[in-house]
Image (cartoon, rainbow, N blue to C red; front, side, top):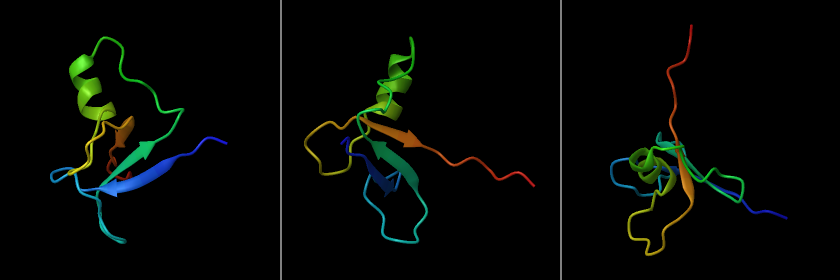
Length: 70
């Protein structure tokens, strides 16, 4: 069975946040895309995210919240 991981991360410090804190949603798993077509710089930023203090590169996608519509 595939394993997925979801973390809430401070986008500036790249550190995990505690419960009830606002941050970016980082998702890891076997079905996460490998990147954007012909956009290597953006792919590196969004799909090769790494937590502060971690030695290994993770296949992680950063998901950003969009403003709510009223």
